[in-house]
Length: 227
Image (cartoon, rainbow, N blue to C red; front, side, top):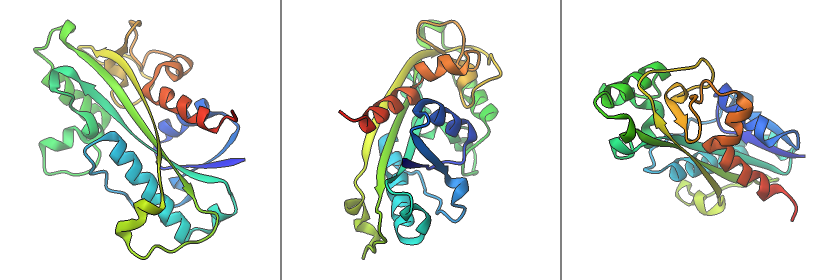
């Protein structure tokens, strides 16, 4: 059975990934590797951040963790995703999880409610027909070597750990106030094309067919499906 180390501690994200990929995989998360290094997501694109997380964690596992060497084949699955709003020139984009923090000296992710409040404030004078937006996701997949390896220089490990990427997007619009109790992030404000309910109002079964992450994961799932 293929083992996937999901490079997150976000329980909502883990649940969504497990539901979509199914029982053909064994899943681990960063909660199973408490000493894993924190990766700074400072790339300018979703693909750059996802690949950086996957590569750095795969390298760390290959050097320090005997656990994954007994779980071959094992891969690191890392994603970066966020919301792009046309009226804000694509913001919050790669800053989606820390959107509110950009207004202060604080660093790191900020609460969903704060991010949502900032988004609504910036869009308060934007008409409904100008509120087009999309969720975008890029997943990076990197194999963890079955035997321990050493890399002489940290600047060259990107060459040692090549990433495969899979992307997905979901088009929709931003409404004027939050609706719904399910989901996370900007879900209560996002209505996908063809629906009147927000992601936070739609059931998980429906969302897992529509979401940006679902579309990227379906491409990843096809990658593992024998031709």
